[in-house]
Image (cartoon, rainbow, N blue to C red):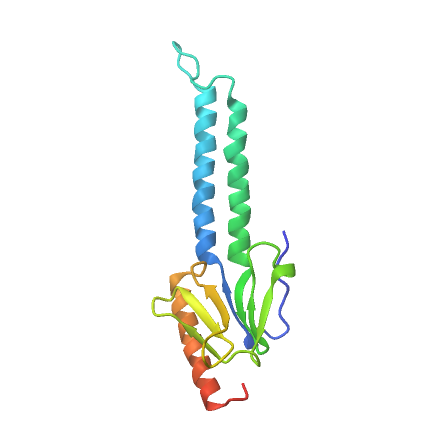
Length: 167
C-alpha cells in the first residue's frame, strides 16, 4: 500500500485526516467479517439430526469477506492519508479517490478569509471580502476532537492575517 511521503519540514504544516470516515469503515468491515463468519457456520455446522441450514452455499461467504477486505482497505486509507493540509503555500484539499489527480490547492494569495461555521460542520474559504465566492469543505470526515483543533487553527490564522495583511 502506498504510504505518505516523508515531509521536508513537517513543522510548517498541519494535517487533518479522514479518521471519522475511517472509523465508520472499520465498523462496517467488522460487521461484514461477522456476516461472513455467520455464513460459514451456517454452511458447515449442523446437528446429528439435521444438515447445515446453508449446505452447499459456503461460497456465498466470499461476498461479505470481499466487502470486509474493501472496507478495511478504505479505513486504512482514510486514517493514513491527509484530507486537509494547511501549508505556508495555502490549503490543500484531498478527495478520497485519486487524490494525486484531483487534489485542490487554494493559495493564501487567493484567500480573503477562512472560517468555520458555528456547529463545526463546514470550513468556509472565501475568495472575496463580500463572501460571494470560495470553497466550502465538509468537516464530517474529521474527528470531532480534531474539529475543535481546526477551529483554533482557523481563528489563529484569521488573527494573524488581520495583524499582517501580507500572509
